Length: 152
Image 1 (cartoon, helix red, strand yellow):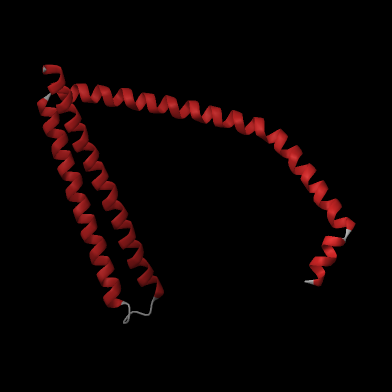
Image 2 (cartoon, one colour):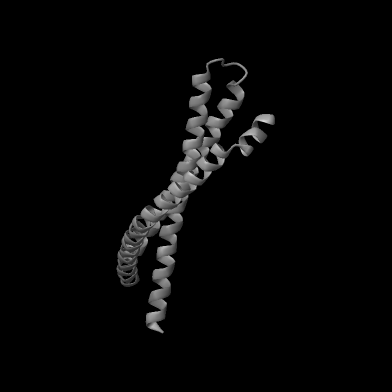
């Protein structure tokens, strides 16, 4: 504690604080325009990508609204994605059960770690597949709503 008090009373410490503040202020003045330009470019690129994705989605919805065969194909793809999600979740559950049962018996850290990695990867894969199926289901619902709105 005495060292801290001694440092705070030292003029050299205060001088170093002032110099560090000036250096940080100068760096901020030079970096701010660079960061602003980078943010603007990134924002424009993100906006362009989002607009392209929206146009692609609108074209797909128009195609789905006019073609029932394509709706059926997309629904089967949705079912496949949801089935893969359930199977991945089952794999994650089995890997976790094997980990819990084998934990007292297996001393190899690599085996237990591998089981946990498999369980986590399968659970995450299950989430991704479920989301894919949900997105496809949402596309078909939106296409049917679009078709209904056009006919009304």
